[in-house]
View 1 (cartoon, rainbow, N blue to C red):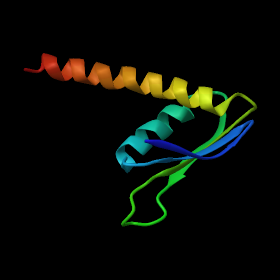
View 2: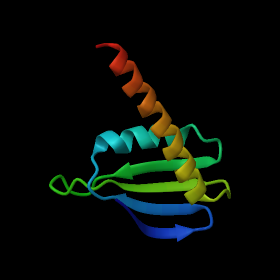
View 3: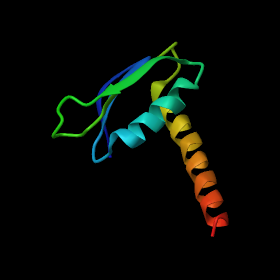
View 4: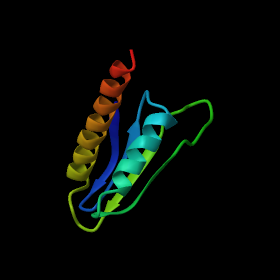
Length: 89
């Protein structure tokens, strides 16, 4: 679940509740591919509470739109991997 903590014109901060570093790393890599993203990253503030907190800063583009677009691209990549795994059987 995505929980927005802070939202500004070119910046969004959100938690990925119930997710791990695995998804956070994949999302971070996808966000870094967007030319409008000037800075992105996440941290996990406590080792027992594994909720990644993300920050996305843009060049003025809507960070929510960039996030949505990145998630769509990531879904396509995951689907490709699933399809390739099915072919291995």
